[in-house]
Image (cartoon, helix red, strand yellow):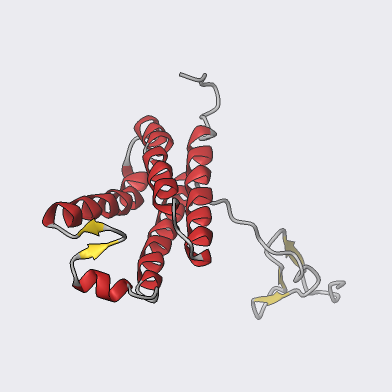
Length: 171
């Protein structure tokens, strides 16, 4: 849009704004189809993956109560043939607490420790998810297990390919 005589026109790059002197900026619609792509840091990506995994864990357990006879099993003190004891519940609590803590730790640990923690820790989770799927017959369980494993593999991949500062070497 050409400037009118006597009215300065200045296009601010990438903002879609034009300054028209008096009256302040106006919005230009010429670039309205271009969306800004903000960079998302590696820590935030990995933390978000841990959050998604926790949601899948929770919904998998909730959906499990819809399996025929599951509520009766729990009332009887067993789940999937395992006796529900304080030790069992403590172990499950540790399993969930570690994944929950990883959301925060991924955001605050030093990069080197963070990277290795997020490479190593998903491995026992993947093994436990595969082990829990053995003998399962419900499709939802397989789906959630596959998605959980895929997200854990993504965590390992993001950690493995953690960006390095310029001028540094692998170490």
